[in-house]
Every structure is written in structure tokens, then in C-alpha cells.
Image (cartoon, rainbow, N blue to C red; front, side):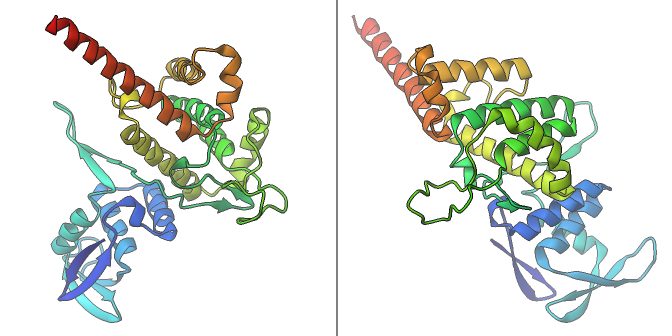
Length: 298
């Protein structure tokens, strides 16, 4: 958290994605979906983070001063001061890109690994950082995400969500003897398309965006946690063919190059597979370096 001082009054606001409340995440998603100029979006996010309410302005279309209500008190704030505070407060959410020879632009840079929508209309989502998904789920999710990243077709986002948000097991509760960290029904690839068709009636627009930002934040976390897997290009591939082939290669590697064992790997926890392959790559690299060192010494 960080402290902002407004008219000599201090307010604590989040300084990273995982300090946001679920309500703040959903509000930010609504603001983002509504669009508009970047300056206005930053101010609206600032209001969301601080709880400040604008109650008046000195000009209808080009205000120079806003009247705001903050901690029960009405105060006047210069528009330039609000813009400056908003720039600071939203820097972890909106990232500026300045490509050479092109107009600068902003993107939402998600580092969100806390699931802001663990349940939606009876559907249960994955745990924080995708901690309880299987390798089969992760492979399917990556393919759906790659399709969405390349086409921006909402159908693929619905499929990504249908893979990860599922109905709970009847009667299963946290703490029960048969509870293993997941309330969701087992992943079934054959029901994804049918379930995806229902997501549009189950998730609101801001919830769709929140699910996407959560998944993208988790991918960033995975890249950081398993650096050997993504050292060459720094990010999981978003190309459909590449994703499919890469997932098969990783599955085969985790199965000790035995096609017979691949079915077992698909049922393993995703993080367990990622850790095992990452460690194997690191160990092979260490052995290669040691062997190279011995050759030089000889």
C-alpha cells in the first residue's frame, strides 16, 4: 500500500494489483471497458482507489477546479493536481509504451494472481496463481488464450473461462475429508464448448475482463517462477500452432519421453509439471556447463 496526501489528509491506496479488493478490480474493469481518453480513465481509477467523490466543478466542459468529497469533507482541488495524483496512483495499472516512430499508447499491465471472482453464479474458479489446476487444464487454457490473443474473438475468451470456472462437486466443502484443495468438478475437455456457450449469460462484461486479467497476471507469475522454460523469448507463445506443439513437448518431457506416461502427466498439478521441467532444464544446463568446463581444463 502507499500513502497519498490530499489537502493534508492521508489516504492508503493499493500500490500493486494484488492489494486491490475484488470490488476495485471489477470497477477498474468496468472503467477500462467503457473506454475514453487516458487522462479521464486515470482519474476514474483514482476515484475508485481512494473513495473520493466529485461533487462539483467550476465549469461544465472545461473545469479548472473540482469540488470533491473526501473523508466526509468537501474540498476544492485543482484539475492539474488531480491529474498529477492520478498519474502516480495508476502507474502500476496503466503502462505507457513509446514505440520508435509511432504514437505512444497505454495498456493495462496485469500482475494479478489473486482470483478476484472465485465464484460467479454458481461456478467456481481456480485458486490464486492457478495453484489448483491440472496440467490438462493449463494446456487447454493456453490454447484458448492463444486463440483469443490472436483473434480477439469473444468465443475464445468464453472458452478460456469455461475451462477454468466450473460447477462445484455436489456436497463438497472446504475441510471435508475428500477435499483436496479444489471444489470444482474434474476438468472434462468434452464439455468445454457446451459450457463456453453459456458463459455469455453467466459472466458480466467486467467479470469477463477480470477473468482475463487474472489469467494474464498468473502467466506473468509463471514466467517469473519458472525462468528456464521461458528464458529464450520471455513469454509463453501466443501463436496457436506454437502453443499446441510446445505443450506437447513439455508434456512429453515431463513424462520422461514416454508417450505411455503422458496421460498421467495431464492429470498432475500444473505447477508440479512446470517445476519438474524447469528443474530438468536447469540441471541439464548445469551438467553441460560442468562438462564444458572439464573439456577446457583438459
